[in-house]
Length: 347
Image (tube, rainbow, N blue to C red; front, side, top):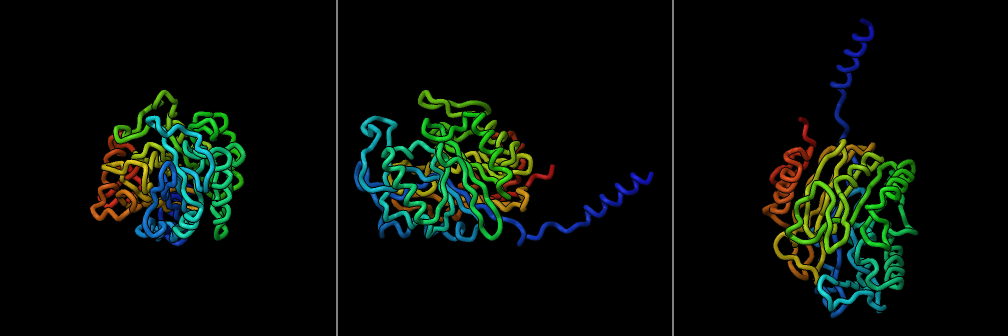
């Protein structure tokens, strides 16, 4: 009887407790592929030395506690391309070193290197890219010698690790490596973020398969299983890129997962027509123990050479809502409004 009464009183106290103050929440801003311009195989660079490509979006990244994206290509001068770009489905991107500061100016703290363009100019291109990012104070992971990183900001430690699908990256299909890296990172940080480059590519692959997928004869992984495993191991935020289109979002065990944030700022050399030009910024507000509280899919659309521009009609958010409801049969764990506002589904 005493235990029942005590339990009842504790339940009342818990129900009456105020919600966590908004100021105590942490804000994570995420996006997909970034390729600010290329000098290979021909020079295709945006106007004004690229200074305007992030103009519509940069405040979202500057205002966030942590901002992260995927670097699609290398930042270097010269070097020898490792790909036969005359062949179909073979692309290489090389952004000038003078553009590196644009990432810092836009508010980015982190860039993923676990993707299929990190090796476009071999060891030289990768070394210069890492030097350029380090010079701008931007962290990176995704390769065997940089498995994870901890970024400390305002007294909060953010641990980040990333995975790709190429031989020179840490692979999301390597379950043992994923388990080892995420498990080792968890006690080193307050908030753990996992990002990945995976999935088949193109508009017809917007839907998230419920199982493994392949593309061009390559195993592109079971991304639902991978993302859930990361959360089960302790990840607080998981987000992907790679298909060049957006995919579904999900709240799993109170943690936010974005399966692809698509192209984001890919000025030239990548198709940005139709849904391939959808360029969302996902801003998630989470508690200091990693639970998703609220967020928003901010809608932007690309046109060639411009970078992401505001989508006043919120078509991008509505498209991602449709994908999320369809691919999870109404059980993505989120309520998604017309303007992209995300809240946890209560039932």
